Length: 367
Image 1 (spheres, rainbow, N blue to C red):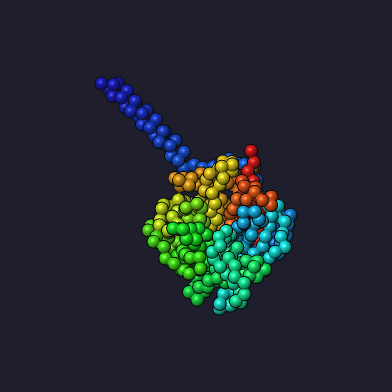
Image 2 (spheres, rainbow, N blue to C red):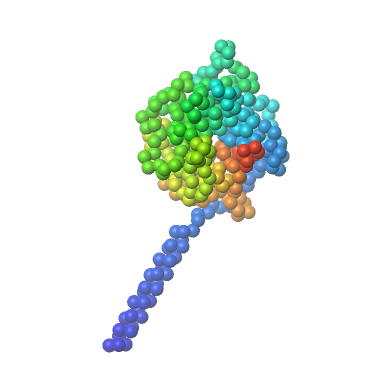
């Protein structure tokens, strides 16, 4: 009997050990950080002189949002110098420089998000002179929406909306449509909301109002991007000054809404998020990140890759040498338009490594 009991006990212990080993293997696998194939090459094209680059532009300080028209060069928001500058896909500095005006109280307005307007809506004028649809529009940290058309003023933007008196701090801007109407969406970081404007720059309310019912406490709308019929909103932790974000691992949320402002789903609440701002959908020929949602983290300079349907974290963009891509202070992200040396599958970015320095660059996929 004793021999029999010993044999049974040994068998049970053996099975337990196997089970524990199997569980341990599963846990280790689950805890591994996903990785993206190391096939991305980053190049700094332009800097203000603070970083090595083939081109130097002293106006490029705290490069923020980026946008272009379908056949033109890239426009960059220069938050520190209150200007917008233009570069082709090789970083060649273009002659046009547009200056943004202060708000009604005289506060200097640093541009953040920028969009190109392909419609005939969003009409602007200056001093009662020529009227034209805005070609490019900016959100600013002084609570204004600024707009520019060469038919109005050749090198000056005008203020189309001003909520500086209400304490607005606009950190992001997107353009889209709902129910046949063209709209602007601006993230007011200070007042913790997304403002929506109609074609005449009137602030309006949409049915959903861009509310996440389970948003963690302390987070506020930060970046915004309209991609197809989805509006992606990123959230960062609002600092005690009510204007700036608190960077840190896990300090970030990404949500998806429809163009009526209705909450669709949470894309990510991830430990890898760190003050996320830029959002872009990768094309089908962007290597291991093809057809994935890319999210730039201002806080640590990385670009996270998510499945846009499931929200699964796929990893961070990785350099060809196997290291994680990091660009301190990364803001705007945009794929090229196949014009001016801007390939459709090249990811362009702007950054402010410090509030008084700036870079503009590109990320190309390698086989």
